Length: 199
Ligand SMILES: C[S@@+](CC[C@H](N)C(=O)[O-])C[C@H]1O[C@@H](n2cnc3c(N)ncnc32)[C@H](O)[C@@H]1O
Image 1 (cartoon, rainbow, N blue to C red):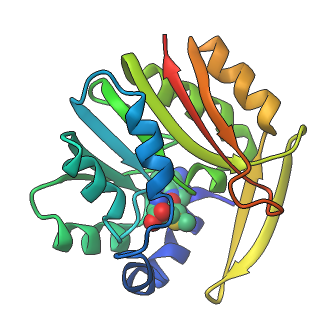
Image 2: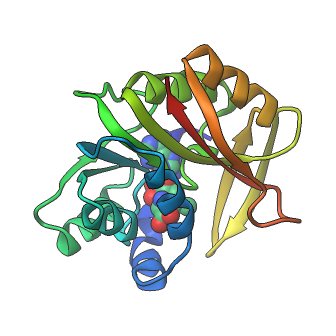
């Protein structure tokens, strides 16, 4: 699915997302695990941050200068209302050029929506936007091969793609990022989170 279509669908459910996730602990323990590996706490970027602001809030509480990026204008409008002091970008991560290096980049349940062919260049780009010692956290579909699926969520049809965990680990290694943690955290769901650190 073209990222613009993904954005239009998330625009429709941005209010629901905020109400449902603003105080949710979903993904926060995993973010805190990633934070533990950081040696420096300068800038941090949450890719596909959505409207809840919960990752931004956690990053801020841990001393990062947090920024958020999302392709859905409505998600960002709502996130800004919660965090008016934070820098937000309304951008497609496939096209965005990082303006600086980050100590930590999170992409929780966001890059799994990218078209399959965008997976590798985006993960490479995020790795290249890390400072030495910087940490990346992202979720992906598990398994050993690439795949694409679609599914209905809150009345909207979404598409998902994955390269499989072996390919993601190869991409990370090629970008000098070493895997610090990989977990099927919702087993038997095919949901994986990976934490890697730039050497
Ligand atoms: C499942 S929501 C997760 C939101 C947030 N990470 C959270 O856990 O609350 C996926 C988010 O990724 C964003 N997204 C999807 N494709 C994107 C893209 N190409 N560039 C930037 N954001 C994208 C969506 O607009 C949506 O806000």
